[in-house]
Length: 100
Image (cartoon, rainbow, N blue to C red; front, side, top):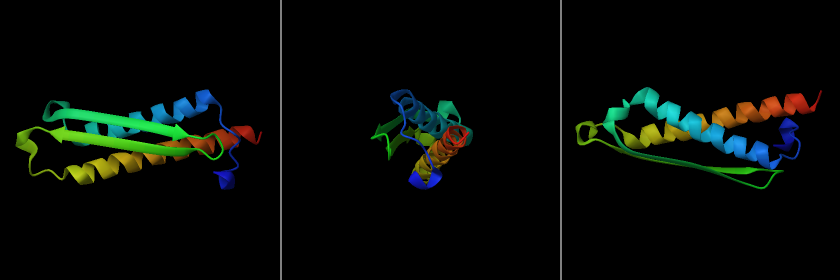
């Protein structure tokens, strides 16, 4: 985070990071699987600290029995990756605005 030149984050910015991560993970999953084929979808994002901030994203998905051949772990891994990509993009935007 220091390498990006990100200032110490406010509580609101940290909450925003968690929401961005959750939204990105959800959108990724829903772009791959129709919602009617998802039995349960639990996504949580937690952040600790403000500089540096440590982010943890958990995704749990249970698909309908008709999707038993689908690689759920690959889906979850992709959702977590997308969450971190979106958070990193947002952090870079914060860094750009803080340097102005």
